[in-house]
Length: 618
Image (cartoon, rainbow, N blue to C red; front, side):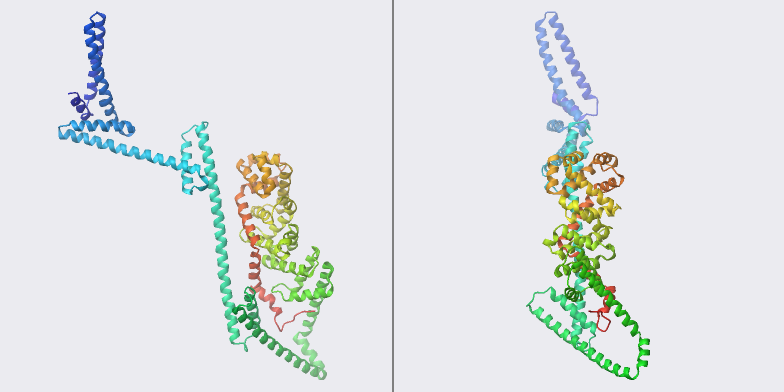
């Protein structure tokens, strides 16, 4: 009968039957308690004992009803908030009732209720499993940040932020989550920086591939001209012969001697040169015949020749030749003055200048030789090395450089000692390549980069900075409209103060004094970047102002310079890496020189060098 009552209660959960039954049981227990007390108070112990036994049975029945019927009823009414334990208990109870059911409709109702309980259990277990998986994923990510995937880091960051909203900002749990979030975001920032570097490298690779394709097309065009010239050797123009010789020489310069291909091109070069000499010899013979004829005609018709000369402009040409000769003589005299070379050494050096493949006039090459002398370079080989490097930098970077920039580049090579390891020409081309790459990949000007580097070089060299690192700072400052002289002074002062009192600067930035001093000694640029990063982490300008004041660098201009470097720290790192790569390769300025040297303007400037035109020699 008791099971039937429970069964009836479960089936009819929407009625008041269950509540009424509970009330009946509670009233029964209350009556038995009172009867028991009355029996013992009147001294009827036998009746009291009997009532006590009945009371225990009634209390047991009420407790069972509450634990089974009422708790299950409450669970079924609040499935969405029930725990796994409550749901499992309800499921067991419903199954027991189903076994005792005899009415098919009752069985169907119980089965429907059981189905809902099981569905909620699956959802709850799924959510619990998901929570466990997420917790495991976060734990694995936090324990191995350096090898965690980007998805795991982003997921962990999001979950930590979500959890922090549930905690009091002053609580230990909040502080713990905040510390973990800081580590995760630091790793995300490192990955993003690496991605940016990869993008920069890919852009460089794309550019190199594009330039290589251009070079391949140009090489094919040159070889086609050579082939056409060789096929029509006796009828080709002088310009085609000269250009073919130049193209073959360029190809042979990059080939191994002794190979079959080298020998074939060497033979072609000989044939072209022989044909060119034959054509020039014909020109000389023709010139000699014209000269003899002119002498005879001059003896007979002096006045007529004078009139013809005036009409053809010969007098003007001769005058111009004399003026050009005088200018060249002055330049060669100045070369002797500044380099201490003898006249015959300067003459031989100018013969080498004539052989240089450049759009630059020989007069300008001699001026570069004068600059070499002013730098204390006196040997012919070193002077020619300087002139070749300086000429390539001048042609490549054009008007962007100032008048004294090339001399400054030579001084930088000597100051940093790179002329001892790379040779003077190699060191100059390395510096020029770093300048060219930074100028091409940003709004920074080449003149600013050289000037800033020259100003900071003294302190920078002593501190252990490289030219590329200094140029990276210059690039960012120029892009952000900071004057070169002011910027250089601010950076010099900052570096000097950092070395004078590293403990103070470490304290200002909130860094470990011992570690900062060690980094400053071993990697000054790394220490500077570390200090700038700490400055940036301090916040906005209002937070940085007291730091500048404590550093005794609170002038408005110096403040602007340091604020830019701190704010654009990522750009500084990118620029330094770009400059360093270009400096190590040392080819950027040569590639730019080749492009400029073969431009239409260069060909026009070099037109005076072709046979048949006026060519000043000594």
